[in-house]
Image 1 (cartoon, rainbow over the protein chains, first blue to last red):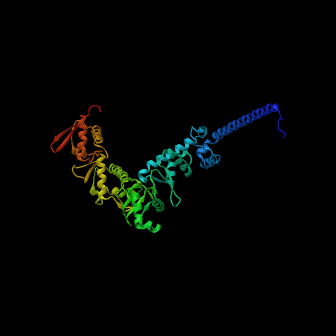
Image 2: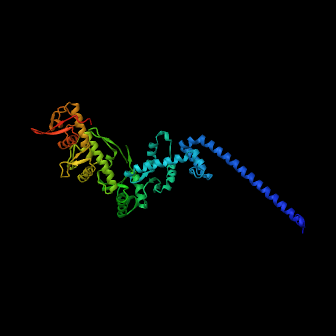
Image 3: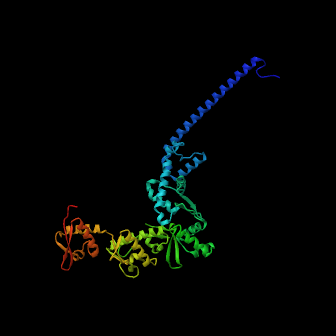
Length: 251
Length: 192
């Protein structure tokens, strides 16, 4: 049988020799790979810095651009909001983290200041309108998507901010720690279509509920959650409920 | 539905909440009730200041055609504040020192503090200075019904008495008994 390196004692030496050579070669190779990676990373960082300085304003001002950018980030698995402790240069350079947190603070501001009149539940459209007003013309345009994203960044605070989607697809932002049961979600959706006013008869007619179920849902919202106001002078039914978050207040 | 502000015939701008039907019902939820009642007391004080009204009675919600009807009723949505709720609003205002039951010992009629007695004291003192009536004796009647209308025109006697009491404490007024009732002498005071 032919053995590589021949036979005899000298063969051991030769074998050791070639092992050493292979090891050297492998170190050399991985070193060059690391160097290459470093170079790539540097290049990426430079390109990113370039991108950030060029498009920083566009990202903050233009919602369509911001959307495209955020999609790109999620495709390549990068979190543009990563804090200073993990990959901070990304967030720092773009200023997107600050932008997003600022929006979050503004959302909290509006939710808290309107809580007295809407019971801690605000229509997405109304929130967007108030946010735009609060930020002024220089704040740039914002979209529903920005709000949803900002609310996600608030989640670690554990204050219960949540986007609730109603049966008819419309969205509301809830700022109180409270579970909406299914019936309440239905009542909210119908109240929005009715402009705020809701009575048992509407629920019976449109949803086929029994009177008892309709009354229980409405009274719960009124007495336990403060999500609606009572009107005891209703011309038609004598007693009606007003979901104030579904009402538009001018001025 | 959208609720808007409304300007009344007397030129008062009613807030949009005044056109919301449930605004006229006392709310069973405590937090909601506190919010709505707070809105009512602000509205009542602002309107009182606008019309220079000093007194609010529970019966103002029972009768029609009184000076409060623009606020206590909303004909456009066919709603009115019920006397029981008005009574509760007044009670809250008394607790917050925005009003005081006058005369004391009943809960049907209140004096509204759209200016506190301390503020009325300054108004009275300023008026006496600007009209050159320091150091002379003024009857309560002369203050509450002056020949030239003043900010103090129609001020109720009980409120005027409180204002004078405030000035007396700082040595700027002295109550004096005059032939047909009460009078007061106002002084420059100690540079305060």
